Image (cartoon, rainbow, N blue to C red; front, side, top):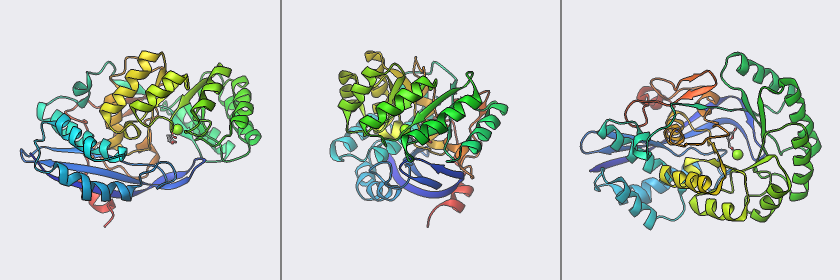
Length: 369
Ligand code: MUC
Ligand code: MG
C-alpha cells in the first residue's frame, strides 16, 4: 500500500552559467518525489524542469503544490504494486501536469522493480544496451570558452557530440559562432544546435541553410512548438535532420507530428511526455513512422537521469544518442554513488529499480525549507 508521498525541492548551482534562448541558468532546482510503501519499499522519481516557467508550463513550485494537494491524496491507500491502476486513476482525474505525473510514475515503477529485484528497464520491455552515447551542451555564450570546453571533454573521453544553444542572438551571429566551433573541432565530432523555438520560419530558412552547408548534423526545434506546418515545410526543404523537442509533449503530439512529416528525429523526454510509459509510446510512434530517436533531458539530477537511461536502454534504434549529462552540469551530487560516464557513454545502472540511491544527508542539506 502507498503510505506517503513527499516532494523535495533542492537548489543546486550549475558549474557555469548555462545560456539558452529562453533562460540563463545559474542554478537548477531539483524536484524529487519519494513514495513510501507499507511493505517498507520506497521509490524515487524526478520532475525537474528548466528556468522556472521559462521553458515549460510547470514550475518546481507548481509540481510540489499539485502533488501535495491533488495527486498524493488520490494515491495514498492504493495498492503500490498496481502501478498501472494507480497511474490510470491519476491520468483520469488530473489534467496536464506531465512532469508531476512522470515523477509519480517513475517512483512507483522504481519501487515495484526493487520489490521484484530487477532493473527498471526490465519492466519497460528489457534493455538492449548497457551504455548510452552522451552529448554535452556548449552554452557558455562565448565561442572561445565553448571550444576550450569541448576540447577538454574530448580529452577526458567524456563527450564527442556537442549541442550548441543558439537563438538569443541575430541569426548571422549565431551561425558564425556555430561554424567557428565546428571548424575548430573538426569532422570527427558531431556538432548540433538547439534553437529552443527562437526563429521565425524565414529566419529558420536562412539559418538552417547556412548550418547545413557548414556540416552541422542536427537542428533542434528551430521554430515555435505550435507551428507544426512550419516545421513540416522546413523538414521537407532541407536534408539536414530536424528534431522536434518542445513540440513533442506526449504520444498524441508524436502521432500528429509523424502524420504531418514535421520532424526527422524525436527528442524523447520522459517528463515532457508525461511519464516513462507515455515516453515509450512516443518512441514507438517514431519507430513505426521511420523517425529517428534521441534521448533528451530537462537537465535533471541523478534520479531523473537514471530513469531516462533505464527507458532509453530499451530503444532498439537510438541513432542520435542522448544528452543525459544533467548531473555533470551541477556542482553537487545528490546520489550516494554518482552515475558513471566513461568512454563517451553513460553506463546504465544495473541494480534493482533505478539502480541509484539518493544521499539523504546531502538532500537534507540542500533541500528548501
Ligand atoms: C532542451 O531544450 O533540449 C537539454 C540540454 C540542454 O542544455 O538544455 C536542455 C533542454
Ligand atoms: Mg531542446
